[in-house]
Every structure is written in structure tokens, then in C-alpha cells.
Image (cartoon, rainbow, N blue to C red; front, top):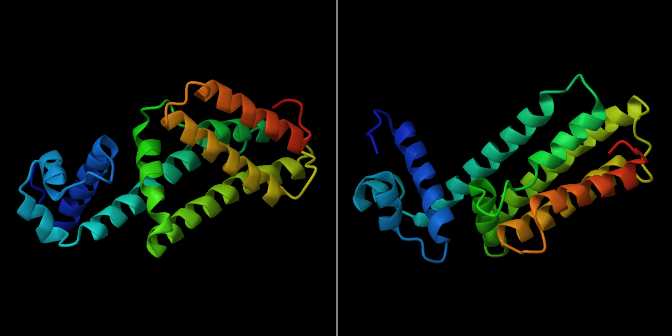
Length: 202
């Protein structure tokens, strides 16, 4: 790893390296020397910036959440003035792993496992869920205002159900369940959205 000139850049580089190490090895086997090797620095350099491994792991989780949400927002905002149905399709598409080796989703699911042991990680996971629900809610509200969607229940409940289902399918995809792939998951989510919104175009 090239040596950045400022501490912020060095921390960012270590966060990225730790994310790659976690994705490749998992949290259970994670060691400082693995992160150092991934970053191309000494273990002492990692410890200089992060004396506690838990602090680095939490920053990896924060970074992964923000990057994932940024991609989702960018994917759906590209058609913000367009068809709500297209935006909803794009939201569904952006929430699913590309395949079982999708690095962002593999990292997120690995880190989410810390939620039952850490209030910090649990709060981060809850925040991600709330922001994803908000993304769907906005799309649904615009569609309702334009007369495209006629949900059978409140839009917040529809949004919540879509996020829960995409999370479940995503976990099976990255867990290499042979019965579930991206196309199967996308079709199931579109079917649920079609039923809950009353929109046959989905």
C-alpha cells in the first residue's frame, strides 16, 4: 500500500484493507497481521492507528453501510423524475447481491452478525434498515401521488416488507443456497411489490 501523506487517508486505506480481509477470511479468523498484509504495511502500523481491533471493525462496518447506501441511492436517483415503476424496479435490483461472491453484501452480512453482541453494531444495522425503508417509502409515495400505486396497506409497511424480503433472499444468495439466485429473488420481490402496490406493471 502506498503511504498516504495524511492520517485520514491512511485510516481510509486501512479500513478498505480490513474490509477485504474480513470478506476473505471472515471475522472469526481475523488477525491484525491479516489486515497488515492486505494493506501492505506492518502490524505495528495498523496498531498505531487502531490500537483496538474492535474500533477498526466498527469503522469498516460504518464505511460498508455508507458505500452500499450511496450505490442504492445513485441507482434509483438516476430516474428520479421518471417512472415510479422503473425506480421501484431499480431499488429492488440495487438491494440484491450480484451473486454469491458479491463483496459488499458478503462484508455486510458478516458484520451484521455482530449486532447481537454490540450495541454499536446493532444501532448501525438498525439505521441501515431504516434508511432502506425510507428509500422505498419515498418511491412508493411518489407513485401513489401519481396514481401509479394503490397499496393495500400503508406505504411504510410495504417498504418494510420489501426490505425484509430482500435481506432474506440476499442472505441465501451469499450463503450459496443452490435453490436461490439473483433472478429468483428479483422475481419474488417484484411479485410481492406487484401484490402490495396493486401495480400490474411490476
